[in-house]
Image (tube, rainbow, N blue to C red):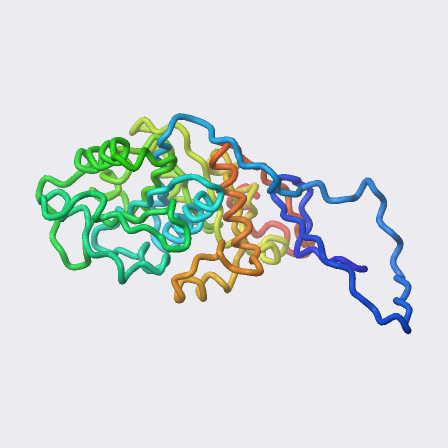
Length: 330
């Protein structure tokens, strides 16, 4: 039996290994002899996720985590949907808050757009209760969605960071129990919507891609988060292509980590299945069989629970294209 690996990575904490069943042959035939030598025991993959145990929740609950980037289109909402459902599948109660007032999209990625009848605006106006505004996912009952407002609706003049802090406190004191995680999907930019979203958070997940525009915005957002008192900042590098990294057409994850100086929570490879899952309202982590990007999101959720991080590794470069990223210190 010959097993194929999509990529080679010496880091045991950043891989998934899958076991391929042996092929069956009729009794009248004999299986062909493999032409490759048998691997030694020392080369066996040790990077199996420990599915036989539940990850140990670290820190005080609820863990209020804001998922931000600064630049738009890098995958904040996709990260919120997939990490949130991964946490729910691990057995933790999760409330995901879509803090993007004008351009609400988290409900679309989760396939819950037809079930959002009430929002935070109705709760603040006294038109409904908080539990009526929470949309419970039918696939995983311990995952709930909360939208701040409907499209084309106007927010009250007094809505801001204090109102979101009140909302988080109300979630802590509700009769159903305090959730383990409150994920806040932050809008793009660093204007009032950004300030509102980060106010109640005590942790941050910074989503970026390996390009200079996203990294400049990520560096700016990191400084703003630290000024706001959020010291626990981890990074997810999205849309990584190893073939472009080897050809020096894309910065490596190690270069990104050195530039931003943040702990690495996860590395998400480029995957065409993201577009399909977005259009279907079916997050990647629910796909069967799982995709590489979906498994990477599950690993990031596992590390988020235990407040762990991974380490980037060096990707070998093509010798003919050296010096392309010398401007960035690569």
